[in-house]
Each structure stands twice: as structure tokens, then as C-alpha cells.
Length: 115
Length: 114
Image (cartoon, rainbow over all chains, first blue to last red; front, side):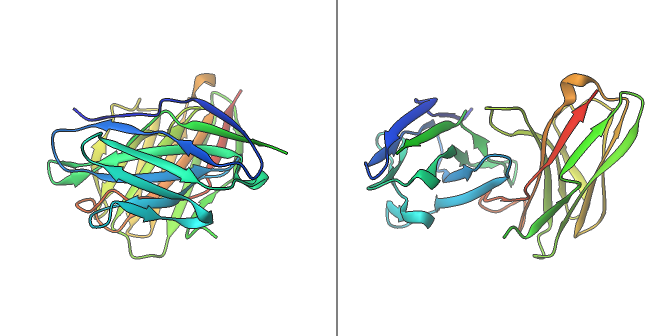
């Protein structure tokens, strides 16, 4: 079975400070990894993804994440956050299951950026 | 701008009503999904269609009835719902079911059951 753990349910941070949102997963096979962002009353939008290749992936809005296979982690980072980054962030993992790839979502981390 | 369009954005219905949620995508994707999302929770998978055929049903109650009339459209028919069914219903699509699992989401339909 695979699972996704987002260790922090809420991360408060001041504007222009750096932030890291943590995501760990468990899987016995290779996986694909994703971070989605959800602004209030909207759907989920893909921030970035790791499929293969370089373990450091860059996404939209200045976010990046690093895939660490030995630690089974895919933490999301931004060097300087804005008020507009306040949103819910979901880590997701997918692996082949009977020929299909259906992502499993973490519980989400609420990023709250204070002025 | 999302390329997955959901209508209506908001829906209020009584427990005896019949209503439908609609989803449309024109990206040529052949897999389409319905998710249910409660406040401050991750999306929960309900149904998956692949090439217009129901591929996955996550033991969803029969008061929810999905339909995929063609490769661009996905409907969710609602009948005799309960107040606990109030939630944000998200539609998503992906190029193929047998690919990476990257999903393209619509903005959701906020359902309130009175």
C-alpha cells in the first residue's frame, strides 16, 4: 500500500520569509510525485511534478521541490513567500496499479502568510 | 484559466430533488474523474471513466450516478441526497488512465443539500 504524509496541517509564516512544506511517502515501487495548490473556493492547480530525471524540480509561482529517494520525501520550498501564496497545498503520489495511475493525496497543509 | 469547465459553480437542492453536475474538457483527454472534497480535507475519489467506460467506482452510494456521454463530457446525476453530501465536487481529467496520474482539475461545483 502507498501512503502520503504531510506532517504539518498548518504552516504560518511572515511575508518574504522562506517556507518548506513537508511530504513523505511510502511505496515499494517507483512513484510519480506532485504538488497541487488550492486557493479558497477553487479547484486544485498543479504546482510542479517529479516524473524522472533531475531530483530538483521547479514549478510555477517560484516554488521548487526536491525528490529524495532514500528519505522518501518530496518537500516543497519557496525562498520568499507572498501574501497571495496563502492557500491549501496537497502532495500527491501515484504508482501503477493494475495498469492505471490514480494519485493518492496527502491530507493537505494550510500555508498562512502574514503581512 | 482552467481547461476543465464545471457547471454550475453553486447548487442548492433539497433531499427530494434531482439535479446534475456537468463537466467538460477539450484537451483530448480520455480519462475523467469525479472527486468529493469536504472542507479542509483532501479530495476523495468517487468515479473514474476511461475511454467513456466506467473504470473505477469507489463504492459510492447509488444516489450518485455518473455518466460519460462522450470523451469530452462527464455528468454526475444527483438524487435523494443527504445533508452530509454537501461538499465541493471536483471534476478532473488526464490524457490516459495508464499514464503518470497528473490530473487537470476544474474549479468545482459547491453543493449544498438542505
